[in-house]
Length: 485
Image (cartoon, rainbow, N blue to C red; front, side, top):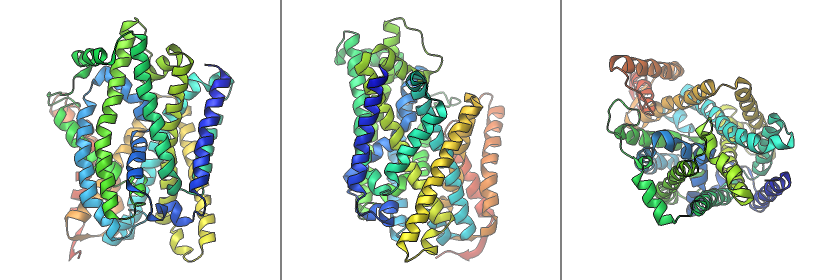
């Protein structure tokens, strides 16, 4: 790929995104930014959320995981369906009944201000680290395979991408993202499907023959029954359900789009459709991973040092200009789709939950808009700062640990919302932050204890459930006699 082709691809794709932004953000106000004036068509939201749910991590990493974990990830995907059903039937009715803009306002109504701020802060920490990690992976690949050829430093690449995302989401916010996500999702999926077709063509085989090859290979293994394995199918299924409940249903980023639907019924239809779409979509990514590894074996290639680089290495170095452009477009789509909604959700949470700008400037739309735009700018730099910290650390083990820590912070949210929804107890609100901070540490040491007692037991994604359980127990200790009506 030549620098000119890469530059033209980036400019054209970004230009189309800005065109969509310009159309959708006309006459946008603060309610447009926060909840899309509750006018988003549910089918549009459902399809667009596919791209945001997958992110750059799925685009780059899931195909690479196939080499070590095979198709076991698919069991977790099936668990997602259960999780989305819980979000649809339990959480969404509460959010719509209370007419929420930020979902963490529920904690204020249910427990008090300390719980409310605790939930908001945990979300901010989780999303800043999570969004930064996802962007870091994508930008790192782009830097290695593309921008180093231009002599552009890593920090400039990061600033460029975040600045572009900042600009096209600044005015319209969620109203814009609902529509740009359709574009992003389409190009991400097309890039994967076309790449599979190109790989099959290069290996001089047919889709049906490749399908048989994949399913007769070891890569297609789905069920692991060994109890101690972190890939045990029951662990993965249960984890998939609770990951969806916590990281979708209790995440302002994912719920903000649902709250932009016209009513509860539309939001529920959106959740149902999304859960069904994600099943075949994730299978496509797994199938791509198997085809990539078969391609490596077919041509006796050397594997990259990191499995994350397998897809980009083959697409950019072995599939010609067309393959490189297709991969590059899919990668940009993945980067934009995950970062734009994260930036908007972080702006919403900091503006409403922490700074309470909606209360301070009630009735003054212009002042609220101006302050909200300052917050948007601040959150952009917060993400840039964390991404650059990841680069300075330059240690994959530490970075992975930070990302895992961000995952831990969803546990207290799971415990808080679970206790609020399934008990009638009030709690000593001022002590809730202590419980929320202590729970992740207790969950970590408990996971180490399990490994020691059960000789090699590996705690997987179920740590989220353990973490939430510790928070629930802590809140039970803090309960008071008065019941919540």
